[in-house]
Image 1 (cartoon, helix red, strand yellow):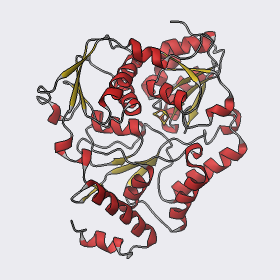
Image 2: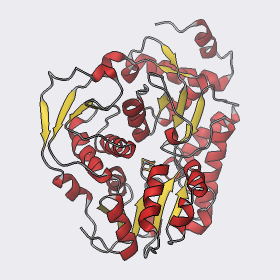
Image 3: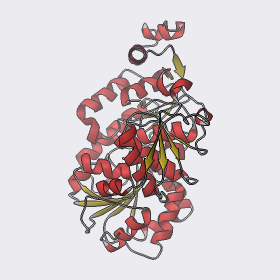
Image 4: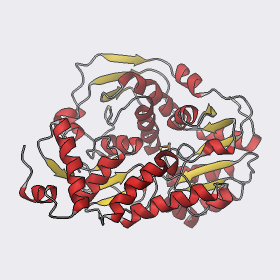
Length: 400
Ligand code: F3S
């Protein structure tokens, strides 16, 4: 496959060294995956932001692009960082870590990327349309964009998303193509799935089974947006699911009427998923909500539950600065923070250096969050719906 004339000129260095390097990355990926062409992307979401994961080597990688004058050609936003960029001091992040983290975000900003630092960019303006080709890298956001919005993206790595942002295109393979977007495994859900935690538990159970297949779910009641978020985030964590369909609910018409030939795997119970995500004791040291980053609807629900109460253990609700600002406008921020809970932006408990805080058991309503807090952050978890978690925040203990 030949590059177009314009692409070849970039490949040959006519647009500078940074664009040339970005085109080399995309051309190499195109070759590896057998893509016939590069396709323009309407938006990019770049992961690889937390200094906890990047370290100095990652910082140097981003600095190279900045020093070589790279600028993005597509609208691009950033994934969460390791700190709340404004309130890091009050929240107890170290000065050294915070300075390094802020430098990383500034480097990305110098490339023209909007430093949204959120894994739910679709809540605050990075909102692709059905059928749009995009290059997103945060796994829960990828799943949401493909499945709920009907946009088209592969699970990009940080460097490939950055290269796509700089060139404004991505190799056209995988989930960019109709032929790969149909279901390849199906689940018939008999278990009672009602709360956002139930959807997370369902995703945790089925993701491990599906691995990188495209699941089609039968038997689910009408779902709210937060249910799609939790289901997709968990499947992307316990497996590598980037796209799923729900009978009569997801927008990709290519799944309708297809998938009947697939054998249905019956999901009778979520008990095993719940027990694997509940490893902590009854004393809760910390409560973490907002994974993926909380929406305005979730902020409203949290504010309503906490009204007139006080939390007795540190409690963070992580979200984007945009959703925090909207919550402020509607009074939810004040209602939440007057209880002692904190609305934290730009980060989350998984990508921040939580281990340094020394918590034993963290309660959360996110199956993805619990899975990674156990495996990456070395803490035990309690997993349940938002109301159970908020009750634990108030009492300091976990009640079933
Ligand atoms: Fe987002 Fe952090 Fe969860 S990046 S999906 S809040 S692990």
